[in-house]
Each structure stands twice: as C-alpha cells, then as structure tokens.
Image (tube, rainbow, N blue to C red; front, side):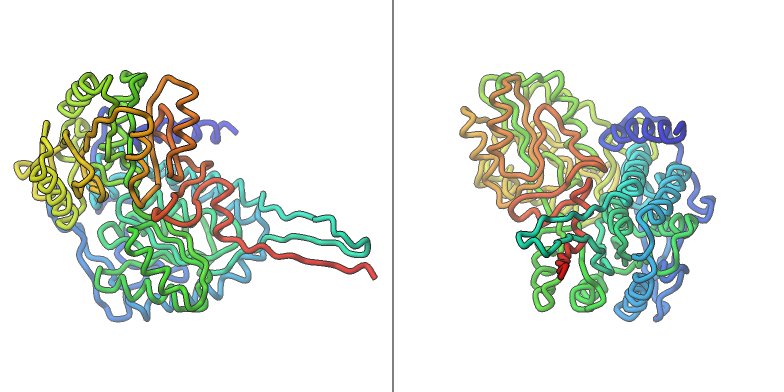
Length: 516
C-alpha cells in the first residue's frame, strides 16, 4: 500500500511535468551505459531478433543530427512471424484469469517506474523533448499499466431477464484475439502503454509496430515486459524503416489472424486502414489528428489560463494531437490577453533538450519543420502578423522552429485548417459566443477543445456545443489512465483509456439457455 501511494503521488506529479516542465534538474545518461534497455533488435516470441534480411536502418537525434544507432528493419515476412507468435500465445493467455494477467501488468508497471529516468533519457535522445518532459511521460505511460492491472479483474458481463419464463440470457465479454498496434513517434511509451495495457488486461495478445523515428523507447518497454515475465508471444514489438511501413500496415489489415487494429496517427493513414480493413470488416480503433481550438471569453481568468496555455501549446514543441492551435479571443479582453500571451511566449527558452532550463526542443524531422514553415509563410503572405517568431531557428539547429505568435489569422489561411504540429499559436478575435462556437466547429476534425470562462452557464453551453471528443473548461490537462480519450468527426473512432478503453479489445457474446 505504501508503494502504491508513493507511486500514485509520483505519477500525479510527473503528469504535470509531462505536460510542461522547465525546472526539473536532469542530466542525460550515456545510452551505452543503460542497464540492458538500449536494444537494436525487434522483440518477437520472447526474444530480441534481427530481421530475416539482415537489414537495419539508422536512427538520429533530432536535436543535433547525430546518429544514435541502427535497429532491425523488419519487413512483411518478419511481421508474419510476430503475428504467428501472438496467434499461438493467445489461447493460453486468454484463459488466464484477470487477476493473473493483472499481476504481469503490475510487474511491468513497477519496472517502468524503476527505470523511468533511463527510459526518459532514451526518449529525449530519439525524440528531442526536454528531459523532464520525457521522464514524466514514461511515468505517465506506467500509470496505464497500473490502472489496467487493476481493471483486468473488472471485465463484467451480465444476466438479462428473458421474456419467456423457461429461458435465461447471459452476456459475456471475450477478448477479440491478436491486436495490431501502430504507435506514433511523438509519445511512443505513452501510446504503447495506452493501447497494450487494456489489450493484455482483457486477454488479447499484441504485435506493436514502432515509429521509425523513435523505435528505441518501445524496445526498452519490450525488454521490461520480458523482465516482468510476460509469456513468450504475448507481447511482440517490431521496428521498421519508412519504406516498409505501408506493407506492414497492409498486412495487419489483410492477415485474418489479426483481429483488431489500433492506430494513433494521421487522418490520412486512418482512411487507408479503414479501406484496407473493409474486405474483412475488421475491428478498428483510430485516434487521428486534431486541430484544437482554445477560446478565451471576456470573463476568462487570464492568471489561470496563460500558464495552462504554455503547457498545452508548447509541450513537445507543439507536436501533440491535443495541442491547442487556433486561439479564439473575445474582443473585450483581446488586447490584454495578447499582451499576456506575448510575455509568456518571449519567456520560453528553446535549445538543447538535455539542458534543464530548456522548455522547447527540436521538431522530429525535416518533413515536420518544412510543414510548419510552409503554414507560417502562407499565413504571413495572406496578412497574418508574426508578433513573435515566425522563422526557423537555424542558429540553434536544423530542426528548430521559433516559438511563434501569429495574430490577424483568418479562416482562409491554411494554418487555420491544417494541423501545424509545431510551436505556433494562431490568434483570432471574435465577438460573440455564437461566433466562437462557429469558429471552433469549422474544422472537419474534433479531438480536443479548451475554453476559459467564469460564467457557469456558459461553461455548460459551450462544453455541450463544441464538437469534439474531449473538452476542457478552465483546464487543459484532460488526459489520464482513467479517462476516455478519442475524437469526433475525422479525429477517429473508438476510445482509449478508462473502462471505455477495454471495450476496443472485447467482443460481446450473448448466451441463451433453455431450461426445458
């Protein structure tokens, strides 16, 4: 109990760091010195293996361009072996009780907590987020293992009173089978845990495809799963280069041994998976792109809102699907709010993510920074004002973009319609609540939304009127292991987290018994 309380307190504290931290004192450890966590092979059927072809691909540190190492470049044939291992392990794993499966997850959680500092260092090296953020994310990821270790015992069915007196009806919940999990580069440990933990809890086995930019942290998690004693074949984690991504995704869709797919990625990739899964009518859970508005009404408490905005916008250099992008400010407080936001943006320190004073690190790769540059240049060409920033920070490094505040943004600009995925704030002035809701709902996406008001009635009206799966009223910290995560419209299908996350990996079966 004492350990649980200590860990719970640590997770809560680090969840704040995960969102934003600039004061945590950290030093980066040598990757070579990590206790067995730095893995170059993929994890298949309980062993770290090289690709059948012997091919590898290089992984680079986005902060400085240095090569971190080479990892196995798995292809379709390698992935088939992983799927077969998961398929063979499924019957025995699914027959275990929820309590038994929960014990494995609990051990995995404890190992992640014990190795959080080392894993955070690894994440910073391959992703570029500041050390405190990275270490906080690992503990946030571990919280999903802890939560679903407990929920494994709470997968309930029910008895339904049947109309005929001689019948009894029973509803059972059963695991769907092998789950193909596709995780993103921006939060690899968190997304692996948020998908794998509920899948394992209910009795599914998993094959995880790691992101090509950040494969090392997921492999470290595979190593810890192995140390936790999770049986061979239950957890499989494969790495591949960009050239093999589409083929492996297509295999997940076409292989009948894979019963469900869970993706966190772009809306465009989600469409491809839906199309490829159609022939088999395969179960899908999609957490896709966002375009989150953040509304400041005239009654907003700016002393609360401005620090919240700092974390919500600039965490991971703005590379988060729930990062606020379009900032809608009511005309009555517009000048005051823009001035306060300007002071905040100017206070951000950008630089080496291993420096404990750094708030914002690099973007993940050249494609990422080119997209941010394109959207900002388009906005400026159409009349937006770069009040702060607005350019690449080439004096720091090739993949750095200045924390940017754009005003006079209009609806015809690409940056209003496309997810920027960078440290850029787009500001729009509005007059009425109706105007704010129209602007907030103008996107075809609806993952997260935020707004600030001191009017309780307005809080309920806007919370109900915004078309997004998650809404924060006077709050931007809206995720947690116990909470459902997912979007409306083209931001996805299904939910992750909480009891709702279990349903994505369960089938509902009806049993009717005749008594005569």
